[in-house]
Every structure is written in C-alpha cells, then in structure tokens.
Image (cartoon, rainbow over all chains, first blue to last red; front, side, top):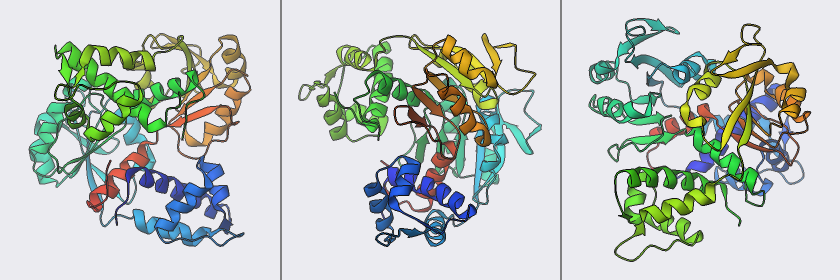
Length: 211
Length: 211
C-alpha cells in the first residue's frame, strides 16, 4: 500500500486522539469532530480514513475502538527497532528523558558523543560510547536507526560513520544543513528553526494558508 | 499572496541552501541541482520558484545571489518578533542555547517555568518568571509568540495563561496532545515522536512514498 508522508503524520495524530477518546469512554466520533479537534477539514479526515477502508456511518460517525485498533495495526511495527542516539546535549537528553520514546516499538541501544565526561557512562540507563566507535558498535548491536542530535558541523561525518557500520537504514535528523546519504537510507528531518520561521511568516501575512 | 504551508517549509530550505552556495562562490544553480541537494523533484522546485516570479534560464539555471535575495525578502520580517519560552527543561534549554534562534527576526523576551530553582534567575541571558505571571509579563512586554516546551499535562493551562495576556498571536508547540485555542491564534506543532513514528513506518514498508 502506498502511503504519502503527510497522510502518515495525520494517521499518527488520529491514533493519539482516538486513544484519548477511548480512555475517556467515547464510543463514536464523527469526521467533523476529529477534524475540529486536530485542525483538519472533515473531508480530509474522511478521505484519509476511507483510504484505509474505514467508512463512517452517516449521521453517526466512526466506532472509536475499532478505528483505533485499525490505525494501531497500520502503524504497528514488525519488531522492536534498535536505535542509537548521536549527541547527548540538551536536545539528546530531552529525547532520552521523554518516556514516550521508550515504547514497545523502539529501544535505545547506544549513545554516542565526543565529550569525555559522557563517554563510558550510562545516561538515562543507556551506555555512551565514543562516536568514533559508531561503525563497530552499530554493527555489533545491529542498530538500524540513528537519531542525530549533534552540532551541524559534526552531522555529516557522524552519519558517514553510521553508514560505514553497514546496518544503517534510517536517520531522524535534528541538524540543519544538507546531509548526503545513499539513496536507500531514509532521512526524516525535524527542523525546529524552519517551523518557527514558518510560524513567523504566517503571522506576518495572515492571508497565507496554514493547512 | 496565498502561500501554503509546505511551500514555506521548502522556501526556508531553498534559502539555507542558497546562502551556502553563495558563500561557496557558486553563481548559478539549476532546479535539478537544487532538487538533488534537498531531496525534491526538479519540477517541484521550478513550480515553487515560478510562483514567486523566478524563472530559471533554460540550460543555465537560476542566479544564486538574486534568487537568494528574493527569497530573503519573501521570508523577511517586518519587525523583531518578541518571543516567550514556557518550560526551561532540556528541550527549552536546547532552543535557548542554539545561536540560530538569536536572529534579527526574533528575540527571547521572557522565560517561564514552575521550578523555584529557575524562577528569578537569568538563563542564557533571559529572565525566568513564575509561569503564573504569564498574563501580566506577556502583556507588559508585548510578547506575541510563545514557544511551548512544557510537559503535556501543563500545556493547555499554560496556553490559556498566555491567551489571557491579550497579546498572543502564535504558538510553536513541542507538546503532544490537543491544544484548544481561539481561531485567530496560529499553532505550529513540532511533534518529534510523530516524526520518528513516520520514519519507522517508512522503514517497515519501503514501497510507501516519502516525499
């Protein structure tokens, strides 16, 4: 099944909302209500969900529990992803201490840093290695996913080390600037400054379209 | 001029790339090259830029300096935005210490936290207030933009305090969960866990489309 990136982002949000609605004891929800709570158009919600075979009942809506289970299944993971975090600064520490990242889908297997104060210690229960050991440690531990939270100037060399492990398949990158990777490695960027610039742009010209 | 959200995200990326190319002394660049470096289709690049009146010369491309200046102008800010940061934990500290956030477009005017260790002190040169003082401090300092980096359970009440200042126009939110705000307040979310979930989804089914 082909799924475009923006759809997946919305699917993750539907999932969170439906979990909350289920916990609160709601049994049905309309596309209108979902749209209002998440800031999407109701027609977008219907389109997204019908793509996955979910058709709401006219005048009633969707069955919260069933829809939630269905989305969980779509988003489910065939295994626990083994993750490394490169860069244990403020941003890295924020991710490590966020319990939401300790899910059944993923496990932090190794940390990497250049700071001698951090190397050789456990941080939030995960061992921190010298970043120069990325190729061997990532290969030994079969780590396929790298979260990159190093300074911009270190980003490319860090990714290159991870690539040379032969295991790397995906990168979540917090660094600005271009990363060059082979075509079979996926990169998803979280560009916080770009998001802030976007907000300021829309504040200066309110007639622009924030979708 | 109506500009959709994904276009602005790409515009911010074009800008960064062009600044780098200019610094490196490049004079022209093709839509093909821009696309390859940023991971977009060349046709998308041409479409985006032509929307702003920039037409590349066939077989030559765009003039780096002129294109860069044009995009700077589109993204430019009519003033320095006055920003408050609520929540000076790891995530908040990461933003405060990132020099990229100290630009001519924005200035951190106040920090807010609930931690007595932080309240009444300057952190990275910005004074930290008790979050209960948000309504008065934001009104006095005319702060229109709030960066929200508080725990999920505190997010809504924090936004409500900011709204009651009467000054709030936009929020950059790092918190998961739904935020309810009046229709005239813009909310841009940075949902890191959702980005990671997206990456894992695309890793499990490589036939999906990462655009």
